[in-house]
Figure 1: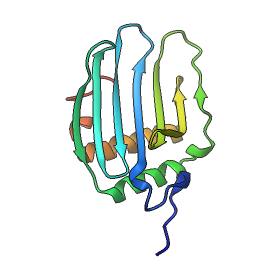
Figure 2: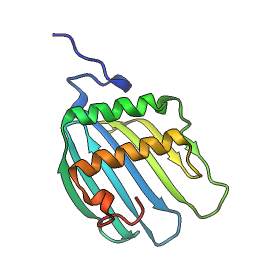
Figure 3: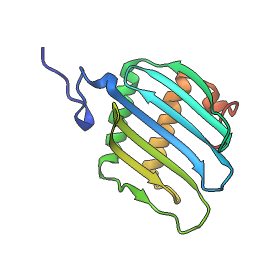
Length: 148
């Protein structure tokens, strides 16, 4: 049986090792964070802390693995492989967005957006949010996150 190749060297057999995370946080000293984590097996985890030292609240859900595969393909179609690793801010305080793709513990792509985002990044962010909302509707209703 041939393995179907996926972006970033994932295969049908290793796709469960995929983790796509999207973190939003401010550089202000007391600010917390919001994070979406989507795994290749379809698990979705939402994490949020109002203040930096607060323990995060966590919500879990699941989506079909095929949806996760389509999300990864969409990220590639938007050009993520060619994006810079850091888009620095000209300001001292800002809200940063960190999009990370991992294979197990290995980071295969990470993009730190610390400025006004470009259209492709915005669409990728929206797609991640949409997939997460299929598992946890509170992503888009404003019931859980303060920053996403």
